Length: 388
Image (cartoon, rainbow, N blue to C red; front, side, top):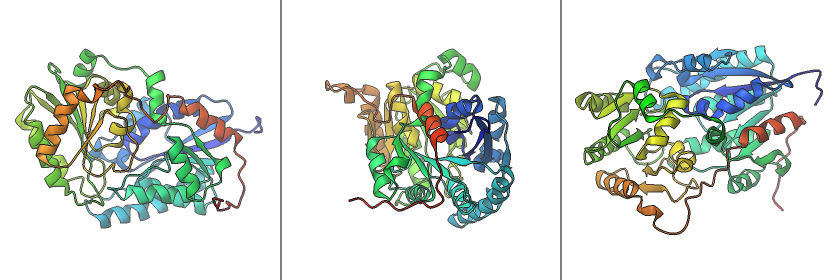
């Protein structure tokens, strides 16, 4: 690329989880003399209900180029659909002002879809991370594949997912298996020790504990309130374990969970703490010291196995994802969850000689993404690739 002109790289973030995964990539773009970081912040980050996490982005040393308000105070599919429309309007103005050379988007959420379709119309090439994956229990699955078709470059988390992106008609030369970008924290991040984590939470962690995050399931027959109550009742069977509960995301059905987890925590203040957002440092530190991670977050599948910590993956939200043997799947039913937790804390899944191997890479994704951004030659027409 021409070193006399910096390539403007816009990066979109709409949730606390996705920002945590992007952290080292953002740092590397920010510190690269050939690149100019433009940060678009939207969605849950701007919501007081979900912790105003845009403030953490500022504290981490980043400049927010544009804030795009899109979330409606709604807990319905109609509200989510309208938020996408509001997002398109906001992203059109923001991207028109910034005029980036490329827009980086991670994952599969509705906020990301709004950003991707807007960039496509404005002829801004999209670099999509974590395409080709499957999560059959959520409409995120369809959104992810739609973003793939709206994107120009692709960095997948496994070789299998690379093949699937190519199967969707993407030219192989524009698709690379870079690994899961969140694993860069393992090589480059630092973590709080147990005492530091306790002080940060203002909650003494004096016993083994579970880290619990449960999101609404938007496609499968898994009612959010009923399923989450089954999880809470299952946790009651392990009184010797403390519990860190984090808020769900902003998908429709999620807000019904928040008062349930707050009520559960308020009744057991010595055993349970509820946190709207841990932030990536506290979250990964909490993973590192946990007896088990429980819920249905993608983090339990992709990042947690690298910490040698078991995951209890509940229900159908993550159905279809590749997973290490430390991921114990169960139904969103009380007894099934109890049985899975027992396997997790006994570590009986490690009895065979086969090592627990995380299939999502080695923690060097950011450098590969930077290399792809710098070498990109954007053609105006993206030809559909037919597999011979």
